[in-house]
Amino acid sequence: MKVLSLLSVLASAITVVNGLGVTRPPTGAVVVDINSNSDTTYKSIQEAVWSLPNDTSSQTIFIYPGTYRGQVILLGRPGPTTFQGYTKDIHDQKSNTVLLTNSLVASVAGSNSKSATLQIYSNDTNVYNLDIENTYGTGGGRGAQAQALALSQAGQRNGYYGVGFFSYQDTVYTVNGTSYFSNTYIQGAVDYIFGMKGVAYFCNSILASSSRGFITAQGRESTAYFGAYVFDNIKLITVMNATDNSMYLGRPWRNHSTVVYKNSDFGNVVNLRGWTNWTPTDPRTDTVYYGEYNNRGASAWNPARANFSKLISKEEAEGQWSIKGTLGSDNWIDKRFC
Image (tube, rainbow, N blue to C red; front, side, top):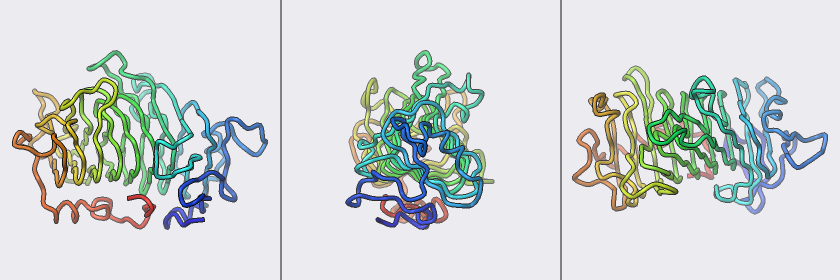
């Protein structure tokens, strides 16, 4: 049995096989198995969430392989909570065996957040080795209102490890709080990582673009609060209908938008300008912070880059924009990841 991290110790240890796999629930875990008829297991992840005590105890939900349908919402639980999917390799998202799926667009749900397949509105939550999708799709094609989230994340010190997120528009929403994503796979086309007040660090992950569009729409509104995205050791790829040099690293949802890419492989995915305005008539680029450092690939930094983006120094990239510098602390992060 291996120690996960300070938070995971509090959340109870997870059985690890050969240091890689998690194939058995820890003692005391709430167990979900859609293929079981046992009275001691749940067939629904949401039913397992509802069963958790509303107290400060550490709780783990262990999920056996299968496809689980519907939304899962964790709301305001005081104690640390861990979701762990069955896997033979915790570091490899492709080894995930648990799929949580739903199809819901924001215009029907009532808001962006309410459309999300997984909604985390609690502090000190860890999610391991789940694939999460919103299958609503393009909602009528490019330009249509098709906000359909896989994740709505709100809360402090929340970690997502070996998780896959799949949608088309607005895949991952960082509403507020601090979050850490490692060994993840995030797929979308339009503003598929977005938020205003959330601070998020993405490490050792794949960003997969499925059509022409924008990877981020970070929406920091003012200097009165801190909101930012940092991408470290990321690989950009295109899938399905995307074409080379068709993606932008981001566009400003609000004009203090703050995004950094460092130590990452852009391949030939990115438009050579790198970044773009919100719209031609509403650019919102006057006070953005768009930084790049030590990236590689044919579409990395070049003379055609947008004039409101910049190359930053090693000291800035690895100091101000380190994990601790970005998130404020790092003692809650599972040190096996990144």
